[in-house]
Amino acid sequence: MIKTATVLLMMLIASITPKTANSLTMSEFVSICEKMQTKCHENQFLQAYVGGALDLLAALDEETNYLAKIVCKDKRSLFNTDAIIRYMMENQKPYKNRNATLVIVRYMEENGGCSAHSAE
Image (tube, rainbow, N blue to C red; front, side, top):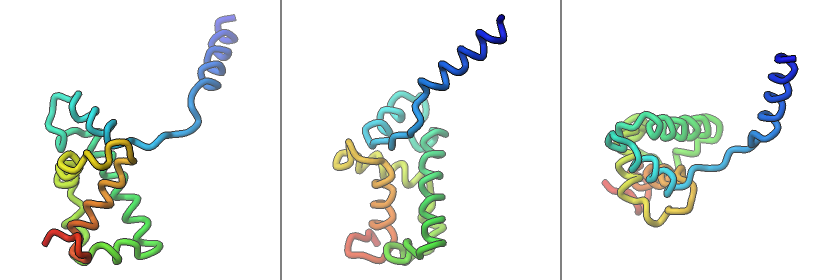
C-alpha cells in the first residue's frame, strides 16, 4: 500500500514538473546577486552560469568559427568569469528583461579587439 502511494505521488510530481527551461533574464541574474552574502563575482551559481555560457560559445566556435568575427585577442584571456560578472553588473540596465547570456556576448564583442565597439 505504501509503495503504491509513493509511486502515485512520484508520478503526480513528475506530471506537474515543468518540462522546459526558461532563459535567465538579466534582472533575475541581478536578483540572485543581490540576495547572496558574497560578492557577485564570487557567487558559485553565477560563476557556473557564466561558465556554461562560455562553454556554449566555445562549442559554437569549434563548429562555426563564430568567435573569429568578434574576438581578435587571445580567447583564453577573455574567458574570465570574474571579469564577465563584473561587466554584467555594470551593464545590466539595457538588458534588464533580456537573456543574461546576451550580456556575455556583448562583453566578448566589446573586449574582443575586432570591432569599433572594442575597448582596447
